[in-house]
Length: 311
Image 1 (cartoon, helix red, strand yellow):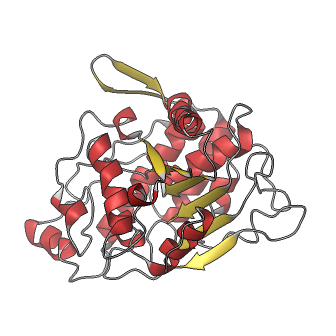
Image 2: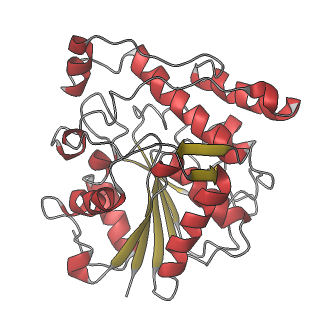
Image 3: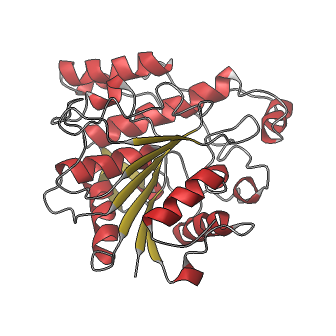
């Protein structure tokens, strides 16, 4: 029996089981591959609660057929205190922030009017600069906390070292399905960083038969520089990934769009092996996992990785 581990992306999310069921429903929507109906088991590595006090309750943004911008009404991103980091670490964060056009030491507050929020939700305008900066500020914050294992106290009684906790949840999810084959990881956004990091650097990580990265920022040079053993010639996690790596992107995805193709960045013995797959979404908000999961190319490639018959 095949098994899939889902890994969600950046920003706040609904509660864990709702999000898990949503991914499966969007994948199966309108005759897509039905994992449960085909005997494919699955789990989700859920980590939003590492950073957020309570789950997102704006479920309409996730259920909408249009795939509205998710968690749009969240408050500003607090500034980072880079003075607490060693100089070379702080410089890495600043390079990443410069690349995506945000200032990590200034709060990110979009200051949008109700009319502007509604316009974006209804996908009647292009992604505005305030929204792009808010999303990318969240990404820089999450990356900073993850790569430097920063402490997070999202609510009373909850204290985490971000990377330790997020790695643990990924590994626990994989181990839950490690006896089942093929074992495939489907990761989105910041979740692709967690997945790649564990496959590349965690000795206890189980072997997997396939990796799918969706809307990923891993193509950024400034992200790759955070990984201690990464090189272009041997960036493929060969020790743990025994099957294909399929990278799915929309070139207008606000997170992946800076550098969406990976074949030249994660080679094996100098040979390109990552399959870059362009999946065009719709509307102005192209980073939505709900949209990606309804893409015909993604569905077909995932079905093949799971040895399912689907067309």
